Length: 74
Image 1 (tube, rainbow, N blue to C red):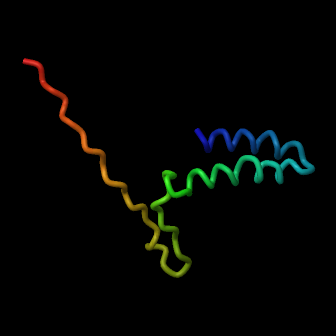
Image 2 (image 1 turned 30 degrees about the horizontal axis):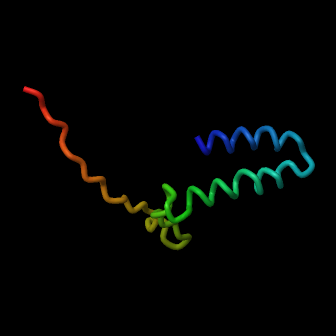
Image 3 (image 1 turned 120 degrees about the vertical axis):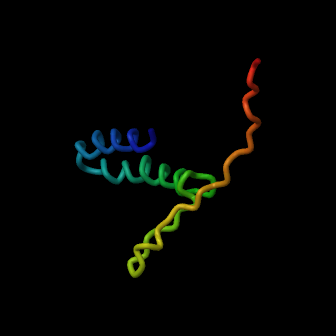
């Protein structure tokens, strides 16, 4: 949803010309990246690719949640 919203804003602001792209970066892209890449964001555990070692890119999976099994009715 964040990517779709950011893309829509891009479409509208890029067409405006002038300072539209600057506004898009300031008001849309930068805050979205802070959320996605922040400490609790979904990409927080990602290790970016290195120019010298592209195999280094990876995502560390977070531990799963402990759940109780669904009781089976007899």
